[in-house]
Length: 503
Ligand code: FAD
Image 1 (tube, rainbow, N blue to C red):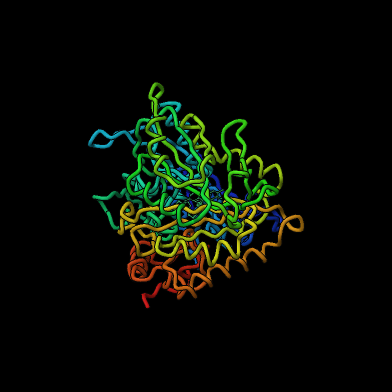
Image 2 (image 1 turned 90 degrees about the horizontal axis):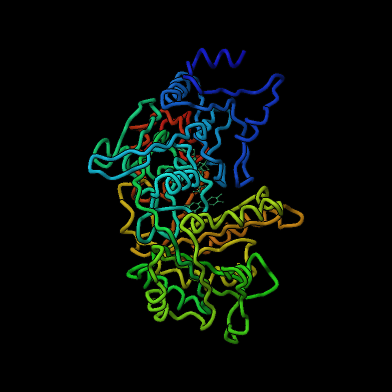
C-alpha cells in the first residue's frame, strides 16, 4: 500500500527503489540502518529510505517533500557522520550509494576527470582510477570508505591538503538538485554561487548527484616516513616548515602516549615497516606524557632514487635521533593504510561502539598552548585511537566555499578519533562526550581561535556563532536554494517548520 502510494507520488525511474516500514510498523533492516550512524550516539527513524537511480529521482523525492506538510530529506553517503548529520527523523533518507557510476571524461581544456555519482566511495574511485587508467585524484581523506557527496559536504582533509587543498578545492563541476527541486550543473564559472555554497555546505543547499574530479598520473611508489619528537614546540616548528616549503607530498602527524603498555595509544602505534620496533631507550630522560610523530610521504617513480632527497630534508628536522621509521609502498597501499585499523577495529568490536569524535581546526598561534592546557593534562592517557595534530594552509581553501576556518593562514587539524570497545569494557560514551565538552570549554575560556570541523550544534545561535561573519551569507544561500528548509535536517541548523531568518 505504502509502496504503491510512493510509486504514484514519486514516479521513480528504472533502478530506483523505495523502502518504507514493513507491515505492522516494523521498520525493517534498511530503515534501522538509516536511523543511525558511525557515531552511534544519536538515532532517528525515517519514514522511508529511497535509493535513487538518477538526479531525476532525487528531484522527484524533493518535489514530493515540497508538496507534503513537513517531510524533510537527508542524503546519506556511507553514514559515517558521528552526530546524526545524515538522519531524517520521520522523513526521507536518500541512500546515495545507489548513485555509484564512475566515468572518464575530459574537460574543455583537455584535463582528464572522473565524473562520479554522489554515492561513490573514495576507495572505489581510487581502485578504478589507478587500476584502470593509471590516474587518481590528488586530495584524499585518511579513510576511503567515505562517499564523494559526504566529504564534499564537509571538506575532505588529509596529509595532501597543505599542498593540494582539501577535496572541496579539487572539484571541477557538480550536478546538484537543490532543495527547490531544480537540477543544476554548476562550476566555478557557471552558477558559481551554488557551486561554492554546496562545497562544505553540510548538505544544506542541494544534493550532489555527480561530481567532476580532476585526475592526475598516479605515482607508482611512495616513500612513507615517521619520525618522533619529544617536545611539541619542535614538532610544530618542523611541521610548519615542511608545509610552507618542503618537498613532501604528504604531511600529517599525531600525538601519542609515552608508554609501552598501551598498543592503541603508546609506542607500538608508531613503527611502520615489517619488523620495525620502537626503541624506548632513545627517548630522552624527563620527556613528558605525550610524544609526537610526524608522518611524511614522498611520491616517486620506479627507478627514481629519492633517498638522498629525503635524507637532506630529514637532516634539517629536530626529531629524536634514531626514532625514524621508513617504508616503501605502492600509492594504493599508502592511501589504503587505514584499512588494517578498520579490520582490527571490526574484529575487536570497537567499530560498532559509539564514536564521540571531536575534530577542531585551530590557529597555529594557539596550538602549543592547546597542547599544554588541553592535550597534555586531559588526554595524557590517550583516547583509544589516533590524536591527529597537523598543519594546513588557509590559502589552499577558497573563501567562497561554505566551510569556515580559523583566522590565521596556518591552522591545525586536531582530530580526536576515539575508538574504544563498547561499555563496560570501554568507557561509557557519556564520559567521553563530557570530556569533549570540557575541551571545548577550555578552548573558549582560553580564547583560542578555533572552529569545529564536521561541526555539530543544536541551536541556531550556536550555528550563527560558528559561521561568524559568513552566517548571513549561509542564511541567504539557504533561502535561495532550499527555501523550505527540506534538506539535511540532522544538522539542526534550520527548521522545516519555520523559514530561515538572518538575525
Ligand atoms: P554521511 O555521514 O552519510 O553524510 C554527511 C553529511 O553530508 C550529511 O549531512 C548528509 O546529509 C550529507 N550528504 C551526504 N551525501 C550527500 C550528497 N550526495 N549530497 C549532499 N549532501 C550529502 N573526514 C576527513 O575530512 N578526513 C578524514 O581523513 C576522515 N576520516 C574519517 C574516518 C572515519 C573512520 C570516519 C567515520 C569519518 C572520517 N571522516 C574524515 C569524516 C567524514 O568526512 C564525514 O563523516 C563525512 O560525513 C563523510 O561520510 P559519509 O560519506 O558517510 O557521509
